[in-house]
Image (cartoon, rainbow, N blue to C red; front, top):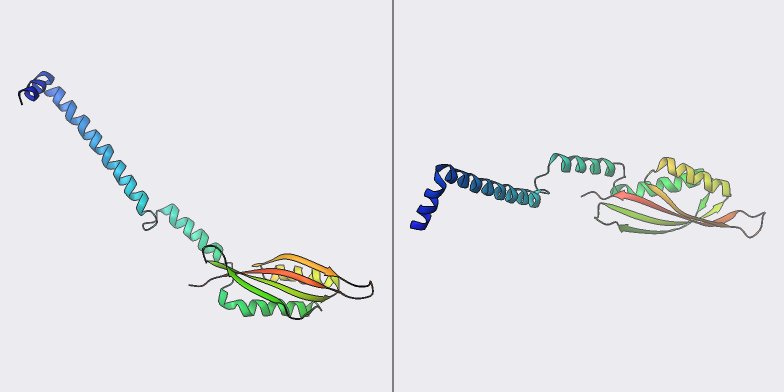
Length: 164
């Protein structure tokens, strides 16, 4: 204890005050660092303004996709547009798969069509305006002779919002 008294006496009151101040500064820095680490781990549960703004942007984007429970109506609209374009669509292959995150799902449709080539192109253009959540993956048309109508497959992907 005499060594500590000697050092304190040697520093004087000013030296002791400076040492205490330096210790308080180190303690404050450590406390702020620990608080920053705590806030970083709690950020998803306690959203900041930036996190909340990003969540609103995502919700607004997802609102543009039709709900999954309207699937039958969307496909019926697609087939009605084909009939209006004087195309014959008989049968088809449909496959629904959820996308990563399970917020959206995709219905892959391969539809056999028969009719005029321009009618197919008009139909696809009408679908783009009528169903913005629809994307064209492939058109494959062929005909045996020039006098015969075109026949082939149209592959479409319809994106739907999964409703919780």
